[in-house]
Image (cartoon, rainbow, N blue to C red; front, side, top):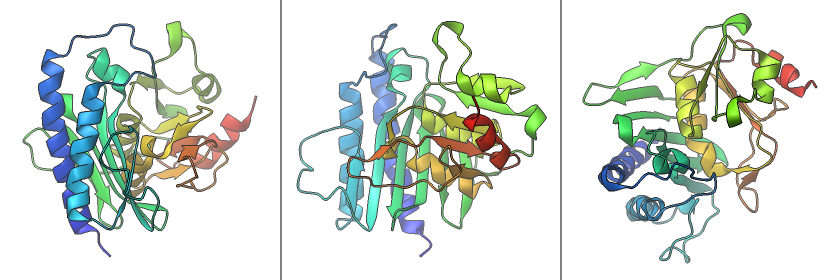
Length: 267
């Protein structure tokens, strides 16, 4: 399968959600001290819109998403084909009004990510890919252009991570010693940065995160020529019983991926 129809549907859903989010964002009152666990009614409205769109197009597919909302209890969450949705990834970025958030829509086929869309509503940017079709980015009204990971090596790496606390040096930065660090709230944006060659490595060392945090971005990185594994260098396994990921994640341009795995295993 080439998954063209699925990618088109995901792009449509992401565009609809982005329009909704932008409208709400304009009038949203910023929450300067928003915690990592924050969720908003906009998250739920975005998810409802996305799931309804995808379910109408592909009624037999499973729907796996971050928020718990009414109306989809009877729809399977696991399946040979499963849509994986984060309606606002980086909700803290939305709540703080930093613009650092994204809409993430991915499709798993037999447990493998085959479609990924990461839309950045505040920037009017969308980065997308399908298995075997390459990765592309459309910025504003400009025509989409193909994305490729960078060729920067071990001594010139740009690392992307979530915002460090109080100026502390994170463990990945301390171990990898990158040439530059880019911080943002959204994991989807981090993986899109790697896919577009604007960053080279994204290490996720959280003890627990979830399929919807990485599925869409996974496809972007691999289709742009990069590599995505857990922190031990093994393939990412999706659809655990609670959709959790407990082995970390390393997305890179693949120039020094194995060396980075060894570096992060140190200490």
